[in-house]
Length: 138
Image (cartoon, rainbow, N blue to C red; front, side, top):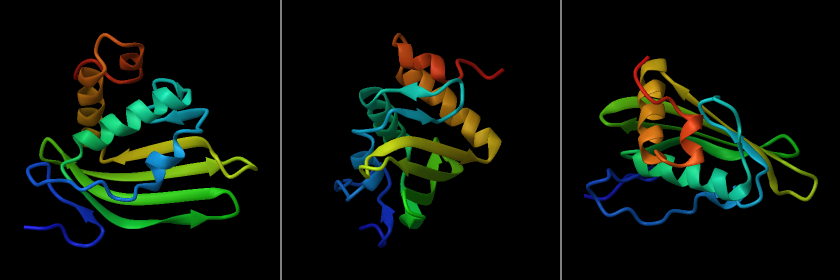
């Protein structure tokens, strides 16, 4: 079974590397905010977080991707993490050179966002990036 246009296949299916503007953008980012336990700083750290987050997504069903305003990019998609539905909105602010300067990722609903955060903490356990995510269910 192949994925519908705009949708990446479930983790059980082979996942071709789609053109993913946000992953390309983060090579220049100075900071990113994901769960808001403080911003993730530096392009390598932000890229690691975005890549790990994408690996947790069982699929990505894009509702919208594209530029907004003079210096922005936005993408909106639905996904699942461990079977829990998750709605994600990613906004990118670009600097005057057109490079990603800031990245903000919003997740809803709250319970799915908390699950996502705990899973990200597990992925980064033992690294400085773990502190940006929730360690337990409290």
